[in-house]
Length: 199
Image 1 (tube, helix red, strand yellow):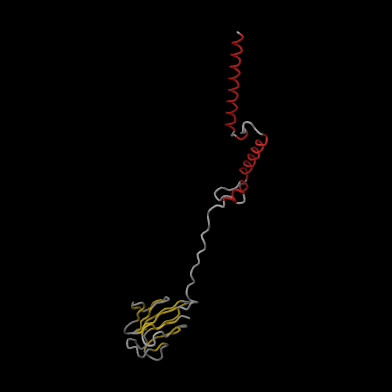
Image 2: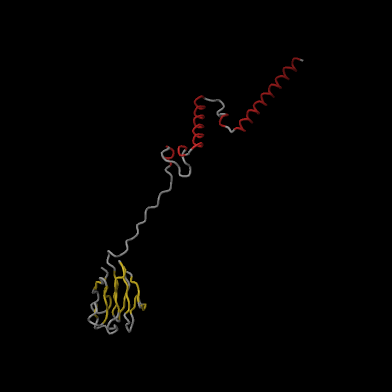
């Protein structure tokens, strides 16, 4: 339960639980009567609960006013540790431990670094580059076919080290034309050499 603790004036250190609300003033009918406090009005101010763990103070038309943290206020919301001055007496407003806001616990920052060992083993895909198994449709089929073709060539021990079937259609025809041209040129050279030697 929130309370007012007297920090200046007679009976310093005395505590007054607020519960739902208290009134302060010189008259005895107040929750916190202060007949010896000459700076206080008969009915000076009130402090009350305005919501769960929320409290306020309001001046009741006093002559000298109610000060909250040295500022004259007609009404003010209270925070843990605020000082309320009524005449010559000063109170500190304190929330109960159960009413104080709980400190926010920050979740640990997520480690964004890739687990490279898991990626190399194939256990974890890279976030920016999906694994072939995650690709869909035609792209996945093409990748799988190329992997199988390269694997087959490697097992067969191809001397060329590459496969014409892996090249694009236009490139493949260009290679075939160049190869045919080279063969024709070689044939022409051989024919001229042999023909020249025979004449």
